[in-house]
Every structure is written in structure tokens, then in C-alpha cells.
Length: 266
Ligand code: COA
Image (cartoon, rainbow, N blue to C red; front, side):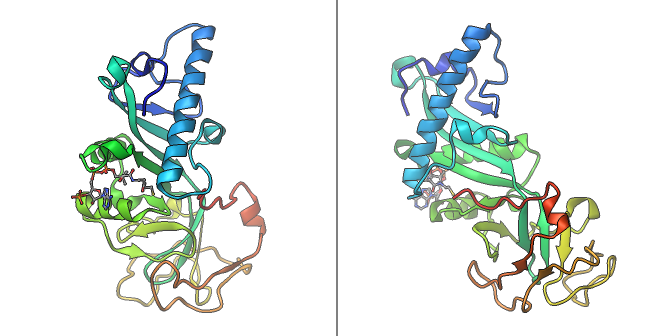
């Protein structure tokens, strides 16, 4: 996407990280230059966010300068420095961030977690299927020291699912009852107390520290004991995005303390 200003003056690298400060990591300049840079980066985020929303048939943008405020979200911007007659163009972006989510594992146990998520991903239509999405995604994985199956994805498009299958062989979706998608492998290291905000077996409470009578699950589960306000009518027996039984979640005290489950932006 072309802009009226010189993109190369804002970003010197091919992939550039932008956070809620709306300032490139390597920025140096005075106050006036700072506000000029922030204005231009806001324009880039707003326009790219809008293009991504249109590409995904979303009613409103998931990515904009204002939506970065007060978050830990990171936008990785991919720049083509020779585009737009040498002014540089923005070819695409990828946005990650942490979200409080209720997520089900393969056997129907529900966890309240705060995983890193892929929140938005877009490559300009004129540049898709040229390997640029992979360059951006790979950069993010290395930057955030993670792997594709450890990320929750906010309502991925079919293109994105095919992208993940093609480049990373990730395809086994664990069904959720929200708009997020997680893959097999996501929960492998979740069964550590430090990673779990809350955990609850769907078909009844079990004591903290006991493991389930299930050959697939050998880890000891960190469980929330005495938390009677998180119920499900039945254990989940089938899988797929719309197959999960919806847990009835009352706003118990543990949920009110800083643990608001934020859910999908889409
Ligand atoms: N139809 C089906 N699969 C597609 C596709 C399309 N139109 N475009 C990309 N893919 C998948 C395919 O697996 C493709 O491999 P193939 O060409 O051999 O079939 C692979 O992605 C190409 O990888 P790469 O070139 O690295 O990806 P990209 O630069 O095209 O970027 C997206 C991938 C998803 C970011 C890009 O297609 C896009 O911006 N789509 C529109 C917005 C969107 O859906 N974003 C996901 C948000 S959840």
C-alpha cells in the first residue's frame, strides 16, 4: 500500500515492530518529529487495518492506531523499500497480542489462560502467494520465541489455515466455543501451574493436583478448587468449532480480579 509520505524515512528495516507507542524501535528525534512519526504510523495502521478487514469481510477493523492503546499488542510491518517510486510501500502486517481466554483441551477440560495470539494478518492483494506472508510470520515466531502450535488465532480465514498447513504442517484444530482456534500441541506445556489462571474439568470438579483417568493425559492438572461458579451441563463429546458445549460462566470473584476474559476482536 502506497502513502503520500516517505515510508523509508520511518522504517529502515524490512520488518518493523510497532507497539502502543506508535514509534519505531530505532526512532531518534525531537518532539515535533516524534508527533509527525506517530501521525504517519497511525495512518499506516488505520489504512492497513481497514484493508485487512475488507479482505476478511469484517464489519470493522481489528487493527488501528487507537486499538493499540493500552495493549501489549505488537504490529510487525513489512516494507518494500523500492516500491512507490523509491518512497517505500507497506506490503503487509501481522499483529500479535495476549488475551484472556477460556480454552478447551482435546479431552474437554477448560482452562482460563492468557496465551499469545495472532490477532490480524494481511498481505496486500498484489503481493499474496509470493512467500511474503511466510517471511513475516517466521520473523514473528523468532521474535516472540514461539512456534505456530503455541499461538491462539482469532478467527483465522481459510487462506490463513491453508497458509499454516502449507508452511508449518499445522492443521489439527482443537474445537473451541469462541472465535479462537488452537491446534494440537497448544496444551502440551499448559499443564504447568504457572501457565494457568484457572482450570476446570467440564464434567465435574476434581481435586487440585490429581491427574485424570485418561491415557492421553498424564500430567498433573493445576485445578481451581472450590470454584463452584464455573459449570458446564455436560462433557464435550464431539469436536469442531461449533461442537463445544457452552460453559455457563458466572462472574465469580476470581474472574473479576484483573482476569477479564477479553475474547475475539472480530
Ligand atoms: N487461497 C488459498 N490459500 C491461500 C491463498 C488463497 N487466495 N493465499 C494464500 N494462501 C495460502 C496457501 O497455502 C498458499 O500456498 P499456495 O500458493 O501454494 O497454495 C500460501 O498461503 C502462500 O503463502 P505466502 O505466499 O507466504 O502467504 P501470503 O503472502 O499470501 O499471505 C495471508 C497469507 C493469509 C496473510 C494472505 O493470503 C492474506 O492477506 N489474506 C487476506 C487476509 C486474511 O485472510 N488474513 C488472515 C487473517 S485471520
